[in-house]
Length: 404
Ligand SMILES: *Cc1c(COP(=O)(O)O)cnc(C)c1O
Image (cartoon, rainbow, N blue to C red):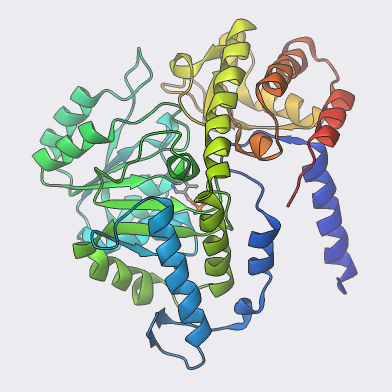
């Protein structure tokens, strides 16, 4: 690297990632193959348009890349190209969701999405997001006693509010989603049913949790979370919606696609279609379960009583410790988590009651149940006994290096 300054920062970040435990559920470690594609000459190319219909010359190789990426995307999720279309150009998850709404929902109409403080995403219609300005959010949450989705409640809300689109798929909901129940609700009010599987796409590809595809009209996903690809996104839709979605992405919102990113996504999708990825996805869920169980054993309240996925929410304030304080204590020791609101949080989002943790990155590093038990005890020791576990963390990290 000729640029010494950036070169040094890359080295510093490499060391940081090597020497800390990353428990942020939306992060992961990509393969060297994905990074090779990202750093390839495809970054030099303009390719506005779609395969076979470009506004620039010289796109014969790019066309092959995008076509291959689409094929691999459908294959990774076991979809028939007769029924499903996929757009692999969205720059990231937020513009992908925006494009779907713009393509399918008239401005000012209602979108039913989960509230941010219950585990939804900004782009599901929150008021500080453009999606909450251009459309009207019908917010929903979880049931107060179970802290899980209450489908009867959702049905009543949908009938009352008549949204044009219902979106499910969350950033801090640890449980399986009953896609079939939501499909029925959407049908009752003639709404589109969209699943934003950004967080758990890798678990769907790896068959560790049920797939939304038999039920949804549209499925959006980021590519950089459990799916273990480069930063980016994809929009899957039923064939009859393909034109509207493609038009909304380009020229509706975007200009030239990031072809290097699409090449990286193609690499990740091929990896996700391998049998080894199924083992990975299963282990991610198993690790999260063990982590949740061990923390419960140590006296922590886990929101909804556990997890079916890659993530869990700990109600640290149930023990008198705000989420921000817990996160800071952990960070000082090299355990990286994020503070998070819990359902019906009585504290502010800036200093909420809980922390959110996930296992995708640790599992990519090769950690299993045994290590999760250790991690749970370290987390407990740091937060409750203000223990210093830096050396223990460093030793654990050394044993499970970050491999590209
Ligand atoms: C991460 C995420 C997004 C946004 O993705 P970005 O790439 O950060 O824009 C949207 N929806 C959900 C559910 C997510 O988890």
